[in-house]
Length: 342
Image 1 (cartoon, rainbow, N blue to C red):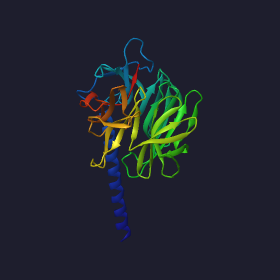
Image 2: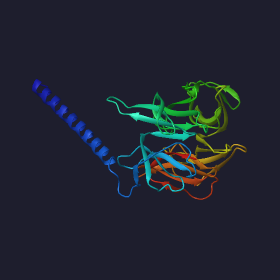
Image 3: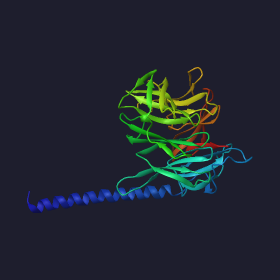
Image 4: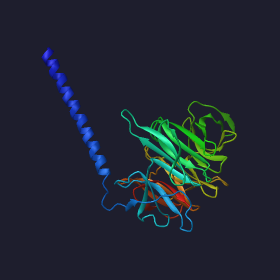
């Protein structure tokens, strides 16, 4: 190949790569511009006041990540729990994952960087002011707060980006907001599987759901199996109590766990069904929800579950009875990561 031919080949490659880069930038800008415009028929959204304090005599409220296209996308929004289709009051505070209880909020947020995105866990007070923030080691997955508001927990993916991946690794942390003591990874806890001490390099822990300020439940995964494990914070122990449990959520009365169960015969990319486990009898009940759901189901009451499913503009919130009766009902469009206050 002559020098001229090499030059023309190089020039062609540079022009081609430049065209691809320009197209990618244009496409990203176009998508960002589209998301910044409210969609026809979408929920009503406006600037407002969002508080994590229990409303005095005004009924419960639902606070969640607003997914509706427009200037308030990704902001925490609030509606009356009994009127989820009401106009949303938005806060200006953006989160990828969120939860709140006892006047404390945990907001997992991201920031775009020149080479890669970064993520932080931000503890919020009842007025959504930042109290403390901590760098995250990976992509946010779940967030939880104990009923008192004294403890917060979060899970991130440090390898892979979903529980359905063939290879993934998580890191789950617990923070005491009274002392700001951080337990960076629950994989350092002593683990018992089926009553026996257990150690393995492939152990993953995720999906904390608090019982009180000393105890919680979480998923433990090892050697292709998942377990519901009971955690003791002071003793730093995890003890498995049931198999095939992922992303647990404890009921307000502390007697049942909602969770995702792998069911044979379902598609490989969505192998779970939403189940409820009675902790007193270890009886499992399949809910009427058959679709693929988000990892962070919550209890709206002792009898009702709320969770996210894929929607036109990201995710919608759905609800279903916890006892296996009824049918799923859409609760709110373009919403994610709900918490009920009051």
